[in-house]
Image (tube, rainbow, N blue to C red):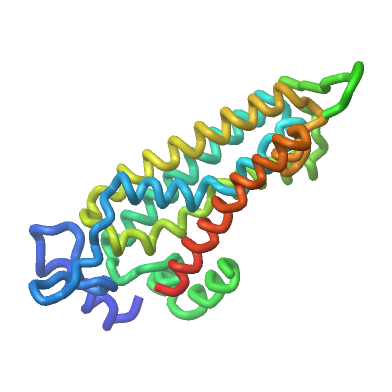
Amino acid sequence: MSAELKEAHHTGYESNPASSWSDHGEIFSKGDDQVDFCTVSWVRAAVIFLKLIFATGVLSIPSLMYELGAFPGAINVVGWGILNTYCAIIQGNFRREYPECHTIVDMAYIVGDGALKELVGLLSDSQVGDFELGYQAIGSPNFISGITASVTIFVSSAGTSAFIPVIAEMRNTKEYPKSVYLSMSLATASYLTFSLVIYAWCGKWIASPALGSAGGIVKRVAYGIALPGLIINGCLYVHIAAK
């Protein structure tokens, strides 16, 4: 980290020991003659985080249960969810020390200067009649299919870097961890519940996206409900980029 950035950090953060979160480097400043944009409560932040995370993963994870088996699949969902929650907390703690960071790219610049910033920026850019259900408590995938399934589950809750820009609009940024724990708990529990229930009913006949496993009318209704959610999710990411 450059000497100028270190000096700016210390002058902005250490000068106000009463507050663990400094206004130095924040997008929205607070003052008597300024509009207060920092109005998002921790509960509303949790809802935003949940929408950012809980998206296409719920459509793809159920079909992966056939590759891994119900038990290993459940372990993957819970394990990766815990790891991604931990990563989100680490990101929040990092921003607490360096409030001038508003994206994961900003954090990369502080850690590794320009080269790492550019690198991270590039990387960020039903059947009728008798049939066999094919339900497996423990699957037997080959190496490639097993790793692919596991990584797909990991990615389904790995978008925690999108949480960072939301911090700037929180009313009390100290409550960021509460929002993370609530949203990630709900996302992981939903992924686990939906994937196991759908897999238990569909077995090897499960479709990907999972909504394709439903009947004709139910499938159309389900996609009609899901599409607005995907559009809202896209709007959230556009908002983050615009800010």
